Image 1 (tube, one colour):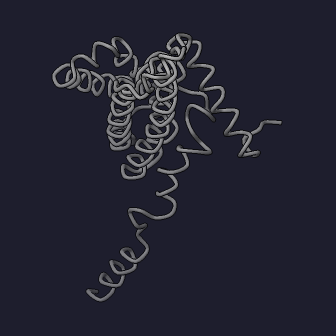
Image 2 (image 1 turned 120 degrees about the vertical axis):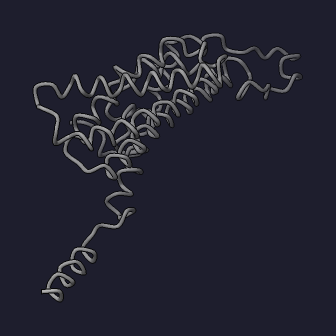
Amino acid sequence: MFHISRKILITMSSTREPLFSSKNIKLLTTPLGRENPITVQVLGICSALAVTVKMQPAFVMAVSVIAVLAVGNVVISLLRKTIAPRIRIIVQLVVAAALVILVDQILKAFVYDISKQLSVFVGLIITNCIIMGRFEAFSMSNKPWPSFLDGIGNASGYGLILIVVAFFRELLGSGTIWGYPVIPQFLYDIGYKDNGLMILPPMALIVVGTIIWVQRAKVKELIED
């Protein structure tokens, strides 16, 4: 009996999926490219327009979404077998709201100036389509570890686009990167001027659209028939 139990344990341990198997690695990497939540799934566009004037608030928003989605995915995954189908959306909203409140208080405590710049958009993480979409589509049917990786991957894909958009908007609109001037003064002296249109929300949409166009030009499979 002891030998049989030992064989069963050895078999279970040998067939257990590694923490960073190729399948799990894809959960981290595919949202950065072919399954990016902004450029492919076209989710989270509102905050991409609103918080990308400067790189600092864009980075803080990205980190905030990573924290909320990664932890929220784990919580929903742990609760998935105890949540009644009729109230699952309510539970997901409560989990997201609790995590967003924690993140908002941490931002106010440690980076108050940036928290003021982000304004209501931190609170609106609760209704971010990416958050609720991953809760519903992935965490409700997967174990905690894959759910955690899925949260990190999708939020990182979202944050990557925020930072890229903010880079171009801040560089061309203000002549700075992370608040530091990078355009040589002699260019201003000979007539160069910052493009004020870049700090307006419509330009964020144009930059995102350009990124989508470039991605589809390189990856033909993303072009819909």
